[in-house]
Image 1 (cartoon, rainbow, N blue to C red):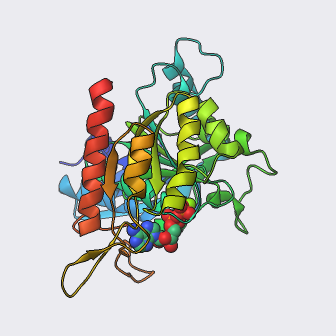
Image 2: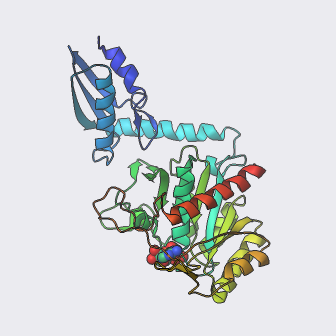
Image 3: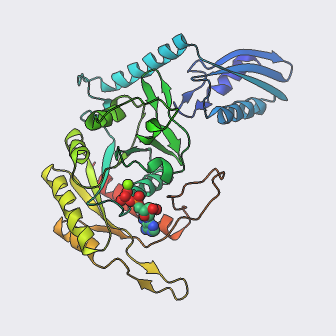
Length: 365
Ligand SMILES: Nc1ncnc2c1ncn2[C@@H]1O[C@H](COP(=O)(O)OP(=O)(O)O)[C@@H](O)[C@H]1O
Ligand SMILES: [Mg+2]
């Protein structure tokens, strides 16, 4: 027999996809009424227009049907301002508790002893595929089962939301921001906040400050890896990342062209001077495979990646060909113009880079 208690018990396993907590624990399930094998209940969302409403509804309905219910009616509401404030305070409290060892106001992710591995993706100049590498590496790590965050730290030149086909905005609960999850990766980008009709939370050229907000005001939860897509070159934000994240490791992206490798060496020198460990070099747009005969022909020069790796005393992680992800319809739920599918040649190359990086990072953890 279905009871109110059995419904609540079953719903304990349904999680709010953004907060990754049980909807029961979050106080979102209300007014459960049982009438034979029909169940009615209401679910209060953190914000009225929660984009994940459909998913929560599906999870709730399926879970209750598994108990044997024939009919499930879910009505949706939204938390009151007071309820939301209480929840935000609770989440903040949990973040603070994670700090425990009284690190002042250092966000838990940045506190010494944080288990999260930071990997900054850097390049000497723009257009070499740095964001593409950051995005595909993040998704490859997530596909391998790691908990991954991705910060688009290219504050002015953000492109991560576009590459991943994200049209959603983060949910903001008072002053706590929930990252947008896409292909299993938690994403935060300035791009979420600068378009029309969306709240501009940070204004003005407060570059370093914004980056700090990305750490302190975003509810990341537990992460194994946090990938940062740095702006190209050795400007303020790149420098800020180096200072803010002394423990960060780094990947350099270059094309095989000597000039690209030469300017990338400057970014590499900056990493070394700030004692960031360089995990390796990714040479992007290294060759084109002829679709007729399979011949691999270089078009943007040759040898840049290898030379850069040698100069920086690190390894060449991969040489990636020129290839476009498959074109998908914008309405396709997997629409992501910059993401290579797992079962494509590029997807497999990225899986290899992810495995190598994990091996390197875990070996020293
Ligand atoms: N291996 C590749 N093959 C084909 N196109 C690529 C490849 N890597 C990147 N691109 C494309 O090149 C452009 C620049 O890439 P992007 O990642 O935005 O570079 P960056 O962040 O260095 O400025 C984008 O249009 C991207 O889709
Ligand atoms: Mg970019």
